[in-house]
Image (cartoon, rainbow, N blue to C red; front, top):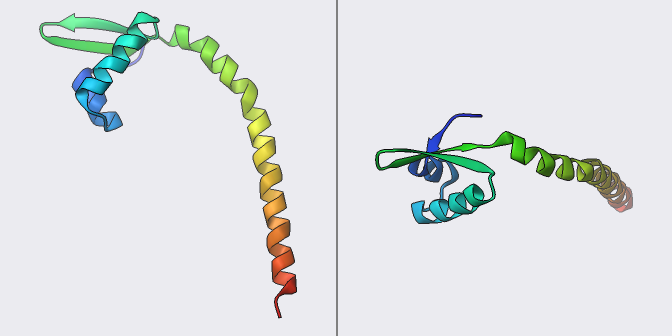
Length: 89
């Protein structure tokens, strides 16, 4: 488990309003992606990394595809730019 953050600390980090962060954290807690620890009137949240592992594995499969696609786009744009430079008087 990583560092715990309160709702207000999380809101400051992401630049969102506190009610929006609270709603998102409630959903993440319901599906087990974050855990909550209450300390008086404060709620401290931490990421449940074990639950995120399948999500990470699913996303990684697209990483190589997008890297190849972006490399091809970069090559194509470079060729277009060279063609424009060669056609300038």
